[in-house]
Image (cartoon, rainbow, N blue to C red; front, side, top):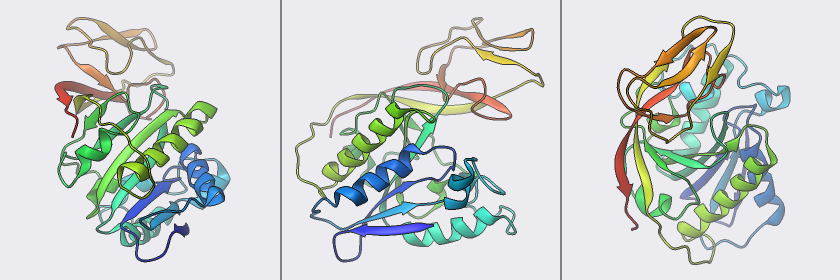
Length: 262
């Protein structure tokens, strides 16, 4: 794990990249900030999390780091030790965790509830939507005692995701008062993440719908080999992709209205 800092004093702000080793955009955003060395009004901790997975170009070494913060994960996993260390580094702080996805090129944010000052920050980020994942119990970074905003910066491995990650990192620092600037709060569509959509066993998968666009009851939204999957009720796809996850397509999101400017 690589840890650096902008400014002096004990940071209350943290930017994390490289939770997953095959998502380089957050790492590049952190490296960009380190190279630029902007003068910050508030100290900022910068973390590249899973260096071993990054070097190997894989999502993780032994276990998904973003499922290892619950103290239930296999303690012999390399990522279990990383999770313990990362938990200590971000404890009680406001955190931007940068990811990328196989589901959409437009950035969006994921939060676990809208308390603890999340709303005024998220409403100033260049995101297509905000997803409230609720009280997660699957070992994600939200299980730490921190105020966490995850952002999906774009398609995994793309230059666009890297550019978006840099912009989101800068906006986070402006929105939290670490960098000068005036970002207007903007209304964002708000979704509930909902339940996972399981993948039937198959060799080939395809998704026919777009994330955050309503899928009507009875509409075909995906294919597993020759089996076509139809919605048993309307939903709004969240993180839906053919191969982004091993066992699920994504999530049956529900539209909750809008995140009002704050």
